[in-house]
Image 1 (cartoon, rainbow, N blue to C red):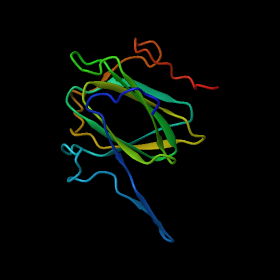
Image 2 (cartoon, rainbow, N blue to C red):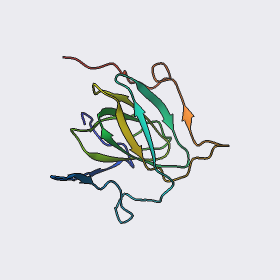
Image 3 (cartoon, rainbow, N blue to C red):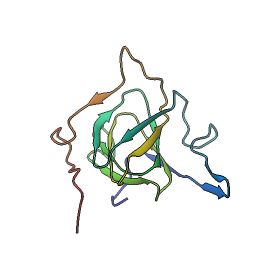
Length: 156
């Protein structure tokens, strides 16, 4: 993470992969984890190579994201009034080469970009169930929504 400071409320849990000749096991989230709040649901979302899915935030739910296949650049932006880290951007490179559970607090903008050569798979465990009538999802454009972040690859 090439950032100065972690956004207030963001938490990480390193995930341990236990391989053997049959395959592997990786625990993701336990009810006795320090970062566990409550259970809403579990879902899978994916992105194809180069695709950006951003920006959005939630007013009620926190997310617990883990990339289980491929690689994603996950980016967070804190625009919360009164937050000690307001204006801060955090980048995380998650997936095959970095097994990490990322807790994203409510009201923090987030999004991701698939940076692997194949589709990347994300499991999210939000603290609330999805409400089809009144979704807790607030979106802005990933490229011209006012967040000071460029999704382009940084060569050099």
